[in-house]
Length: 112
Image (cartoon, rainbow, N blue to C red; front, side, top):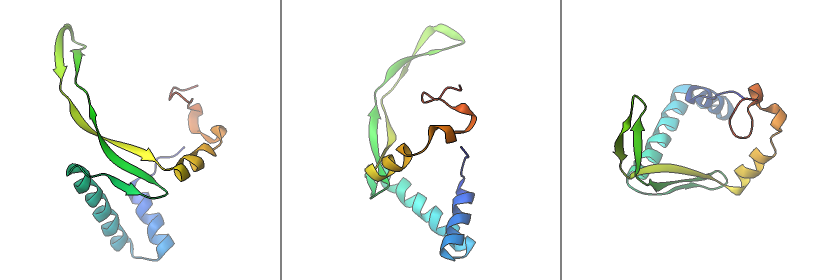
C-alpha cells in the first residue's frame, strides 16, 4: 500500500486529461476549497459513485492527561467530518486482495 499525495493526484490527472499541471493543481485546490467551505457551512457534499462527506457531532467526554492521571479534563462536544463511501467504492475496495496490502497490515490496523 502506498500513500498518494495531492502532488501525485495532480500529476496523474494532468497526464490523464492533457491539462497543464498548473491548471490541474488550481482545479484540485479549488475543489478542495469548495468541499471545505461547504462542510464548514454545515452542508453535506455528495459525489455520486464515490461517497458523501457529512458532519457528525462527537459527544464530549472526560479525558485524562497521561502525565497527570488523577486530573480529569472535560473534552466538549465538537463537529467532525465523516466520509461514507458509495456502494461502488465499497465494492471496489472489497475486491482488493488482502495479500496486496503492504507490510502485513491486519484488518484491525495492527501489524501482523
